[in-house]
Length: 299
Image (cartoon, rainbow, N blue to C red; front, side):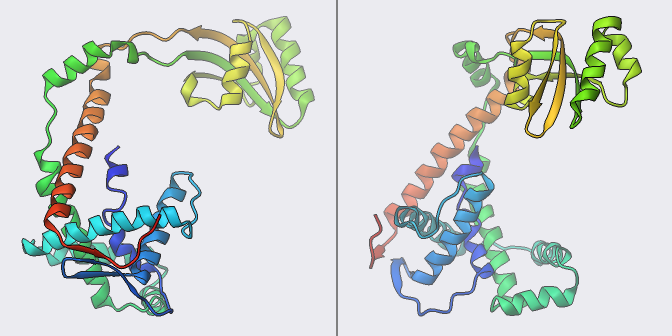
């Protein structure tokens, strides 16, 4: 997704969330802008938090990661410099709306102002950081996002060339009951054997439920149990600390999706490819026109 391409865009304003006390040194000069060791430390920390949201654990002290973060920080600096050269106007309303949202995430205005002080910030500096964030977004919109389009012909051509990729997930209709007390599920199991699943559902409606789901929507442990069972069969098994009774009503094989069913996913995929290509080309041109002097090299 384009989120990965713009992983660094906007993180440049995250630096106000951290407070470095040590003396900074210049590590890169981009045109007339300097990037210090403090800038990189704060940016790397912000980037590592983003990866943490994606379930990736990366140490901000890793030298290779710092090197990657530095390249993204250079990109952000180039993009922001371009936005400032074009004197993009950001309306005060956008800035104040953003500040209002930030304040709303605090228990009170006093707590918000205390947080600013702890981070060595003023409301004026916060406004400047937010203004820079919107400049970053707007300049990327102007030179990248608004210049991308995906035609219906491109979508249909992709579908014809990759039709084998467009299949629905394996589907299941099944009944499930959960309990930490196995004896309760054994009672339901015996009832199913004597009276059938429909009567069991009526008798134990507070515990037993009927579900319809795709394989990808289920926990791997549950889908494995369902796959191991024949249709109209059931079993009791333990998953984590809870016993599960699962009765398989129906298993549906994957079916090929039509162009209509797959067009939105194809559009998103092709749009992201084009965004990545155009963004990289644009940033590459900014790098070519820039004067970048490095005072320290990372692996």
